[in-house]
Length: 320
Image (cartoon, rainbow, N blue to C red; front, side):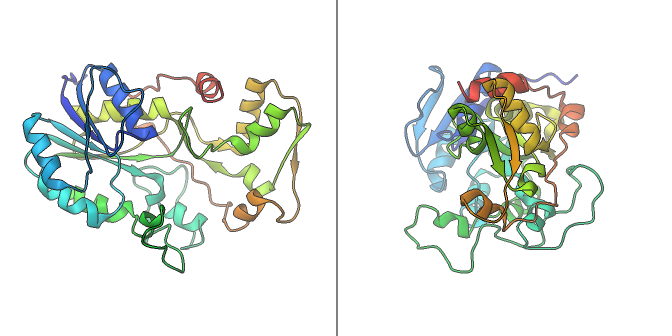
């Protein structure tokens, strides 16, 4: 096995769920961590040096890299090429590794689910070799968002152009494609539509059949953080792309069964009819015959990744 030596690692975007999890797991692995975010980082390990800064201020980030003798930069907030390219240029040749936290939304299957392109011809789970989207800006609508809107960044968001530029860097790099992440700090509360009825003691959960049967990939925040920490310093991860998957993708029906065990819920699952309700309306716009079933085999085979938290424990911590 390749020995993993402690590194001095800078985490950009440490204030969010994923960045915070990465900081905790990097510290646990023995690395010296400098975390950067625009706001205070609650719950950070006491021995982590935290800097209030904006990752788009490339001169400040480069100065920080040099003053702190940083070996590796983990970029959680690389959303748009226009704000990331200057940072990559500033870091080129100054660090030993740049880690791009990318997403499963780069895959063609994601574009097909949202009706932006044809269903890709691909057999089996989505590996790192699966086709990527040919369409761009997956969250851009017919009308541009207001410039001062909180979600205006979504109009220019696209990981694919960033991945392309990262691959061309002379500096060694690693690209990690994440699933949808859940956990105690999940602001989107991804499973609340099924957890709320169980918590309330409802006798049934009702949802569209396509949504119940859809197979997609979720990952627990601590496991995702552990994968990022492993890949950031692993010699075999240099110039490689990995899907980050901790639990085999299953349908929402299966997730309901998992949560039912936790909540000791014995109700039934019913198929809803029509498009009444927020969930039904949102689902009606999606092509859920296309699965987003990522494979994480490569991460395990090449880097020896084993998720530290089991599915049962992940659910228990999420809904504690």
